[in-house]
Length: 131
Image 1 (tube, rainbow, N blue to C red):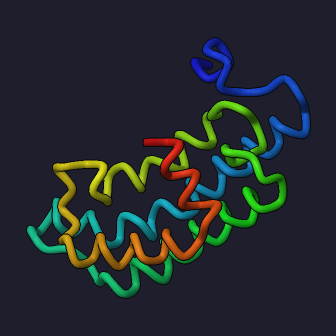
Image 2: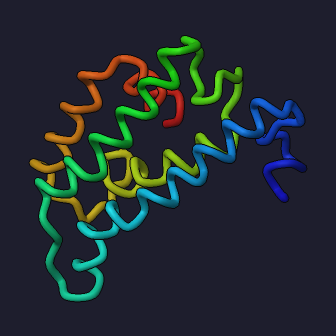
């Protein structure tokens, strides 16, 4: 509702479909993200970092990189400003990496993820635009 009111959604059916599709994809990936971070909140120790990087980050980066590559614009669905899909997909970045000074992810793991991000120029530019 707020996304529509504040202009972060689209009345264009194709763009609305892309936004909804990415929001659904983000929901599907949430358990893979939480598998690493949630154990810290419940038991005081993080999950498996390698699995987290392959199951979550590789897929997250791959899908966004491809979408951005297809149109070459700054934001995921090809708009000039972020949509709710950008905010939804950026949430894990903002929770796990150095943009969040309270991140529980160890620096060495953050650096490994950043290496993956930097290897994908469209994704890297998107992260920069979102921060």
